[in-house]
Every structure is written in C-alpha cells, then in structure tokens.
Length: 297
Image 1 (cartoon, rainbow, N blue to C red):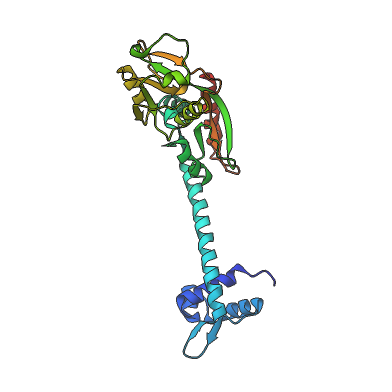
Image 2 (cartoon, one colour):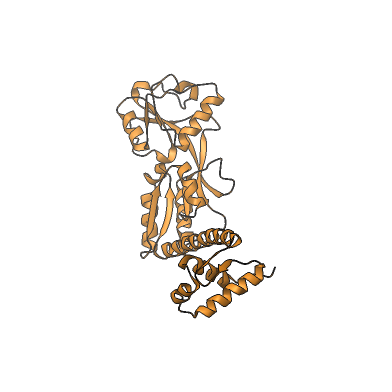
C-alpha cells in the first residue's frame, strides 16, 4: 500500500463527524465534489468501501467504522502532542521553569537567583519547590527545564550531574551533648531525635545507614522543613540530623558535628531529561548553580 495523504484522512474524519459530504464541504469551504473525490481516492488506496451511499443517507461501513475509530484516536493523540509542544515553546519564551529541593530552596536559592537576575535582568524564573521523588515526573514530562537537588537511585532514563558532596550533620543542643567530635548512627538512637520526614532524600539516606548498622531510629519529631528541625533542636527537644547544605544559623549553644560514617553523604546536582531543548537562559542559569554550589563546598 502506498503512503496515504494525511489530507485524505482529515477529509474522511470531517465527513464522518459532520454527518454528510455536503456538510463537510460547507465546513471546509470546498465543493461537495471535491470531498467526494478525496473519499474515493482514500477508498481506492486502502481497497475498501468506507461509506454506504444511497440517495437518502451516507453512513459508514463496518470497515469504515473501524478506520474512523482508529484514525480519530490517532488524530487526537497527534493534536495533544502538538498542543503540548506548542505549550512548551510558549512557556519558554516567557520564563524558565525549574524544580528545586526544599532544603536547597530555603538556604541557597535566593542568592543564586539574585545573581542570575543581576546578570540577566529581563529573565523570569518560576520555581517549583518539590521533593526529589516528585521532581522526577516534572523532569520526564519536560514541565521543568531541570531539577536541582540530591541524587536519586531510580532515574536511569534521566541525566544527573553531580556538583556538591553534601554530608549529614547532627545539630546537638547542650542537653544531649557528650562532647564527641562526631556521632555514630547507633549513638543517635540513644537520644530523642528530630528528623525530616520520609519524603526527603536526607531521611532516606539516614534510614539506609541505620539499617546497614543494625540500628532502628525512632524519632520523637518528624518535620517537613530543615528550619523547623533546627528550631526544635535549639529549643532543647532533641538532636536533629540535617544535610550540611540545609544548616544555617546554627549558633552556639547548638553544636554541629558530622555523622561518623563514610557513607553519610549524598550528592547535590542537576537532573535533566536527555533530548530536552533548553530555554536560551537555561544553560546560563545552570552555570550559576554550578559556580554557587562549587563555591560552597
């Protein structure tokens, strides 16, 4: 079978959905004979009669009904794909859209975006603050240019560029401070703990460390944000464990000590979808992220 002209299929859909060749011709500002000719050309190409033609009515044959259902579905998918691409193009003309991990957003993002705005005053950046797991779908669907945050194990189909090694630290109030230069995970279990919730990469890392050491952690407080965890520690409610990048304003009497494990760290970097066509400012913003995160190492 030779390749079928897409216009023939569009005419076929128009004839079915309008209810008659005459109405399809009127809707498309063509002569009824032109529509009839295109339907005949389509029937000849596929070797099937698509319509039952009488003086009173024109209706689909069973084969025509099958073709209509298939073509209608395919055309709907094509239109949705075109609309999606058009939406991406329109969105990129006006702004850059990125996803960012909450721990990074609350501590470093402001300075990074301020530097970007000074360099490119006409730029517009939309930030979606989400957990690493939630960011995966946004990157895969290209609803964001990239994600900046901790590395994940799952995304083999995505590209992760590591930039900053980010270790875990314990923020210890005086009530629970035994003066050690570091804390083992097993020692943490002996104290009241304030941990980030299970949607965070830092919590997942800490749980893996505890499991590998045969220790079970039972936090007294679980919070969403690192500032909240640190404030509870400052109030003397327990020891909080946070990634280094999230620890700000941890002044005495709080003492910040590393977790004593060679595995107690994760990488912070940029997650992108291969084949993504970036906004004109996107690579420039990535460069500023690289510079800022490298400088904080």
